[in-house]
Structures are given as C-alpha cells and as structure tokens.
Length: 283
Ligand SMILES: [Zn+2]
Image 1 (tube, rainbow, N blue to C red):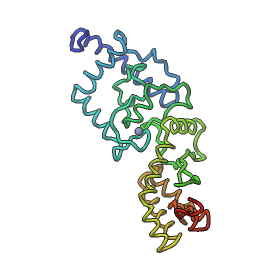
Image 2: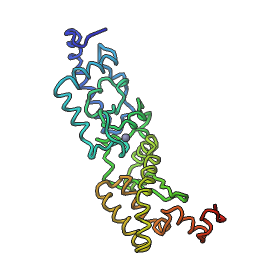
Image 3: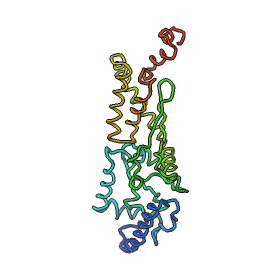
Image 4: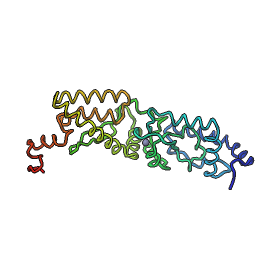
C-alpha cells in the first residue's frame, strides 16, 4: 500500500503536473471544437502512476485536502441557481460528476471544467459513459449554453388523467449536431418521463383551483390563470418544465374547458353526468 504522503511518491506526482496541465489544454481545445469524442484516453494518463492512484492522489492533495481544492469544490457545488442539477434541470445538486470519466481520464479528475454539479440520479445514470461520436456527446453545462433559446415543448396526450409528452423542439438556428446531442441528452436522462411526472403532480395540485375558476369565470379565466403562471415561470427558466407545463396547458382548449378534472372530462366525453356516476352505464 502506497502512502500518498510518501515524499518520493509526491515528488513523482508533482512532476506529473506538466502533463496534467497539458491534458487540461487538450481537453479545452477538443471541447471548443466539438471533438470530445475523438480524445484518446491514452493521452490522459498521469505518467508513472496508475489511474487509480492518480485519482486518489488528486483528491487527497489537489481537491479536498487543501484549502484551494475545497474552495473550488464548494464553489462548483454552489454554482447552479436554486441548487438545481444542470444535467436534468430538476434534481437537487448532490455531487460533482466527472464529465469525462475519471477512470479513463485521470489527468482531468480535478480539472474544474471536468467537474459538473449533478443530482444523485443523473450521476448514477451517466456513470462512466464516454461519447463514441459527436452526436452522443452530452451537453456540458459550462460549455453548451443552450438555454437562451427556447427548445423544450410539450403536448397534451388524451387520457385520464391528462398527461404531458415533453420533447425537444430545437430553434431553426441550431446546427444538426447540437440538435442530436440535445435529443441524446434528453433521452439518456429520461427527461420526458421526469418532466411528465412533475407536470402530473402540478395538475393534481391545482385541480380544485381550476375547477373553481372554471365555475366562476369560465374557460377564459382558466386560460388567463395558466398563461400568467406560465409567463412567471418562463421568465425565470425558459426551458423549465414548470413554465412549459403551464404554457402547454393554457394553449389546450380541452384542458381549459375541464379536462383537468377526470370526472368533468368523462362528462364531456359521454355528454351525460349519469354515465359517470357510480351505478351508471359508464361505471
Ligand atoms: Zn439531475
């Protein structure tokens, strides 16, 4: 068992500093050119030590055991607004994920550009995935700033209760590779499912309010309320599931006229209250 406090070993590792710096440079260049998938992991070893040792050393000496390392760690963890995981836009930040896996790229294991705040789910789903092509390179929260454009949409699926289908709807200005990457990212983290669950919970939570609004002010009152809630949320997060949920519901005539309420929706479908009452023909 080697101790990382061993002066000779530390000397060796400190001497590897140059190669770690060069690795960081290669990483940045490839990221800029959209060629992370083309990186050769053989160029990201730390000479003289095995990947496992390199990672352990870096953590013990470069990241959490020194004041600077700890400060960087805490800054990265605290960076996302509302403690929101930047990979899914939903979970709570719990860890720093290695964008390029540390086992393959030990020289990048404490490079801040390779450390991305993540929720536990995303960290688990992503695992040690490495892109095989440009199209399957995940979106990097620091480098791929797509959220100035509106790219998330949803549609209302018929059913009881209503369900939202979320999907990537890229603006015309996006290049093909970015579209493919966003769709791949969306699919890998199962964001359609994650967002649909949240949207359904939202609908359940406002069902009683919507029913009262519909009764008092009709369809227009329901639509106005949903639109205002959408605008408030979209102003905060243009591609957040919250705002997209309200916007989608506000645009849906059936929903605004009562489809939010399963009993009401059944009445609309059958045209008769008797059909949906217990003991009635529809029970
Ligand atoms: Zn997440």
